[in-house]
Length: 151
Image (tube, rainbow, N blue to C red):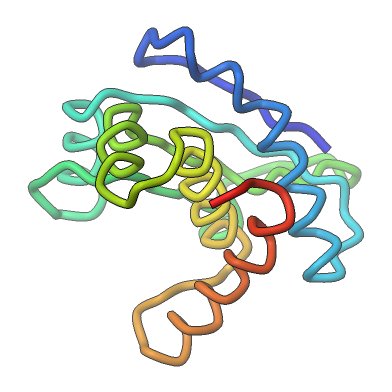
C-alpha cells in the first residue's frame, strides 16, 4: 500500500500525517475486507486552490474541506498495469484542518485523519447523498478512525 503526499500548500506540518494515513488505508481495507494493494495520492492545498477545484469540477463556487477524484469513475482513457490498484486523488484543504479541529474540539491530527478517511471512502465508492448512505459512510468512518486516532 502506498500513500503519496503532495504538498501544494507548502505547509511543512502535513508530512506528519503520512503514517496515520497508511494506517487508515490498512484499517479500511481490513474493515471492508479488501485485499488489493492500493495506491492513492493526497494533495494538500490552500483554501483558494480547493475553491477553484470545487468551482471547476463540481460547479460549486466556494471552498470546501476535502474533494476526492476516484480513478475508477471514468476508466475510458486510463491504462493501468494489472498489478496496480490506483484509487485516485484526495485534495485536502490545509486551513480546514485547523478551522474544523477548533470548531469540533478535537486535534488537528484527528481532523486530518477524518478528512483523509472521508476522502478514501469516496474513492472506494461510498457517498452521503441519501440518509441511508450517509449513515453507512459515517458509521464506517467511526469504526475505522476510533481505533486509530483519539477523538
